[in-house]
Image 1 (cartoon, helix red, strand yellow):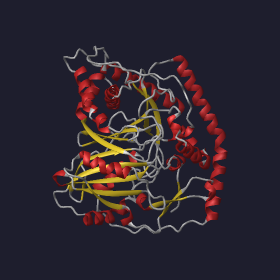
Image 2 (tube, helix red, strand yellow):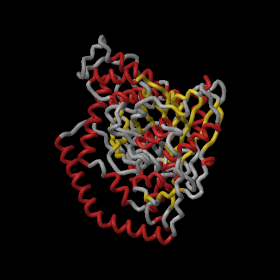
Image 3 (cartoon, helix red, strand yellow):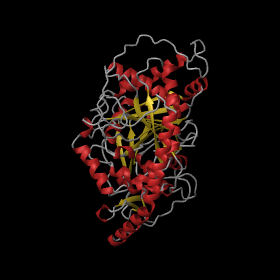
Image 4 (cartoon, helix red, strand yellow):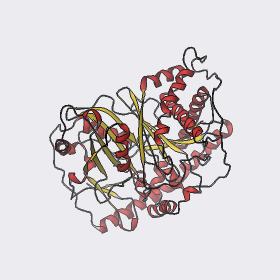
Length: 520
């Protein structure tokens, strides 16, 4: 079956350049005490492919780039092209694992094949094995990727495998005719889209005039940080874990959401790191917080959750790293997220996806390549400083071939000028956090990772029963031992609209234990 990509799915293809890799990473660690071999893993994947229809599809492009590409069943599908093996260095800890994942992250996927690969990473301490799944963002967002993992780990080898008939490559004239029909449909809908957009911006203007707030984040009002520069092709990956019950307890004490607490922890960790670098700005960072929204997409063969595609929108919020008091930071995050959600509702959750349908592919991709080739991110101000995602992971413990899944970390891509992605998945009572950057931006990513437990502990002390903070009051406590090193930058440079079309892999869900909203 030939299936045209949505504009939003296709945008992740157009955003890719030699230094921007638009794939996401899922790193699952399993306890292989029951026995593991690569051959057994390959056999299990072969038996499970009928549960993972997107894994057999590849991209075909229309003539002259006149329309978005389409998915077809790959007539030359070969599972062995998508499976690989790697070995970690001794002693096989999380840092050695992250070094292997960093190398995997720095290589792009081959567009002549289905856009995924899984590497079995062997030699971990305790007899454990890791599986690093690399999925192109055009294939799946966070919610779809979570559903794929449910099918792979929760139902590996179950059911009756079925052979999917491959689609013959469509003839050139059929692709051309389809592109013409697609442009006609979009042209007819363009006046309505322009009107909807105008009404949304008028409503937003009325809201901001009647209810100004200092916590509202605006794209391109970003301070300078070390991770907002042009990228190299290399990537650096690191992980940490936080106890989810601790975040939920803070949510109850502060009268906010779990996502607010997580963003406040990110703000605290980044504050500590930027202070050490002598690069703490005197105003908040602007963060992109993609939000899952309802939308169509292919489901499992037996129905149920969506297994592919992207249905996401984007919120803009502040990370108040300039505030020394953790209580003030959390209160500011809460107000900013409330305002971001109100503005998102006024503009419309589907506006981004609708405009992605009508943006011409060829000029869009050419502009993105020019930004990358000319390294304009070293001179232009980015729309946001970083992406922070929180995605509800699998709700119950999973296993693969009787091997228990002990942890899973996921992270989305980084972009030119936006060189840090922080993604959290909930699993087994933990908030499992992964960070991705470029060594040109953050060569010491583990130092930033080490700041996360300290940032959570700082919040817990501030909201402890004897800390002088009552529920939801946001009362202030004096900061201690904090040097206020700040830099400011008042120059503003615009960046093309391409930067807005990458919500990456995240969700603005209020509860990390819920599947009510999530994305890639």
